[in-house]
Amino acid sequence: MKVVISQSMFFPWVGFLEQIRLADVFVYYDDVQFSKGSFTNRVQLKTGKGRSWLTVPLENLHLGQCINEVSIAPSVKWKERHLKLLMESLEGTTFFDDALELARKVYERTYPNIGTLARASMMALADYFGLTGEKTFIDVEQLQIVGNSSDRVLEIVKRLSGTTYITGLGALKYLEHEKFVAAGVNVRYMQYQCKPYPQMHGEFNPYVSGLDLVANCGRGGARFICSETIDWKELIYESR
Image (tube, rainbow, N blue to C red; front, side, top):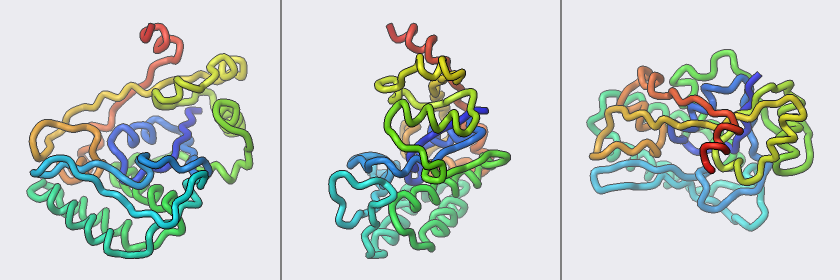
């Protein structure tokens, strides 16, 4: 049983979709502190003028708020700006209409916080590419597991009867791998391939929104969501 635990991200890049593809159980980890500058409320796009950002404006943000406590600014004008920027970025792509329709459907709804909006956007992409399948998606709050950092992550994996925990390279800084081993849980890190696909506006950039993959490749873009993982011991050995 492969478990992925991650904060929700706004119309995320292909690498995030690769984590969903590899998971048997995906845990929404949105009861942790919101980090300014994170990808919970923003994502890159390419345009003919260079890089741009889709950024969701937040209301009354203050230090210490959790992702699922951060409110979205009430004005709807940012949605109009987003759609205009998407049209500028994706104009001329083969599946332009698919991408715009997907974004519009997400924006049609209202959300109590930035976490639920980010979650809806990433699940819209995952559904489009057929990644949800037989997987289980669960909100971490349902598990009622307290604590923080490495110990909490391990308890979540154990509660879900996970045998493998898949995570990004950032976890190298804090994960206590030996505790996972002692609990019978293997830790594997993402190896992002950043496989190039046909893309507008110059040199390929793998870090833009998954909406770009939708617009350029349609549902066939699923073949570019293809990264694998590496065992933690092998990764640490290679990094020495």
